[in-house]
Length: 441
Ligand code: ASP
Ligand code: MG
Image (tube, rainbow, N blue to C red):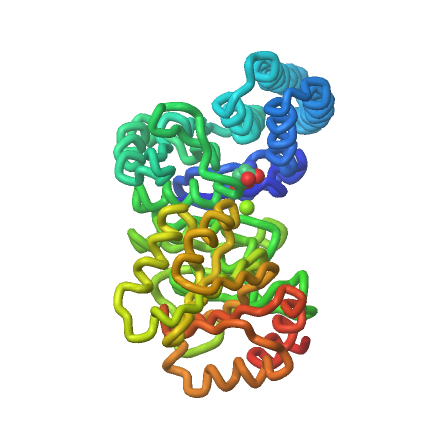
């Protein structure tokens, strides 16, 4: 079984959706197709939800009507026969009456999550009926019947697997099954989701749960690139990455993949392939447990980082100090990304500032606290980088002209993380593109 995930832009226009259908048909064997909502839809649903939570009903209604117009147009372009044109308009009608029903009620967090789910529910239905119009057999495999998260919002991989194993045999005669990315049920059995961009995660969870042959993530770019193409002029796709390298890159800013995607795939060794819908022949990027080591593979950057420095003479020769510091972050459920210590001070970085003032308040009991906002982590990735001599030399020589706030190396054997002021990010990425890859700034 192959898992093929297509994102919002791949389904965003009727002609693109038709291309996907052809692409899926060209691939031999059985596949589960995972779809995102039409591009822009989830953003609009978020807007509508925010208006409704704020009690701004007429603003919400204006957004709903505009989205509805877009969907009516979309459906009318997608289907050709009168029969399916009517089905298309009926689908749109049903979704928008449900959306209006949700909007009319007392709108709460639960209705909000139900509202967000309508994007993927409708895109998959559009696709299913498009295949039907073309007389291609397929079946909708409802994500809300098998995808679930526990009370800590963690996917229940084992249960997902069991439910799929119960559902799939009755569909074993079909080559194409279609399911919704992103949406799931929570521990209260309510409709929930895997957070923004979560369709990649859905694909990976399904792939891992049923030990698929491969998880394919189809996007608009020919795989993961060695640097951020929006910032540096020349970047190259990376043919192969290890799971570890890909997780670091996804986490530290490579927008092509949702950061959690790699985890389930890696757990069961299911390869993840990134492919380009606009250029099917391009190799893309294959992420697996194999891969070369001792080589710089890619650079990614993550903005919105806050550095917190805790300076305390009590740290000198003391034990248990770091534990007490970390406990503060744990208490506020705030993950730490980078750490760097000296004998009398420790610096950590976080990207979630929702409890920053409480955290600082508690840390002040330990010593002098300094906070630097607007920082970026530049992450240089390569499997077993330490096998390559002079890696730090190469990185620092490239960045000779940049002030570096923090460095972390040796934690994972496959990354060097450097913290710089965000104002220096572009320059750093450009300098490293030339210094490490010789691809120019
Ligand atoms: N539609 C959802 C979003 O825009 C999930 C996804 O596309 O991956 O976040
Ligand atoms: Mg995405």
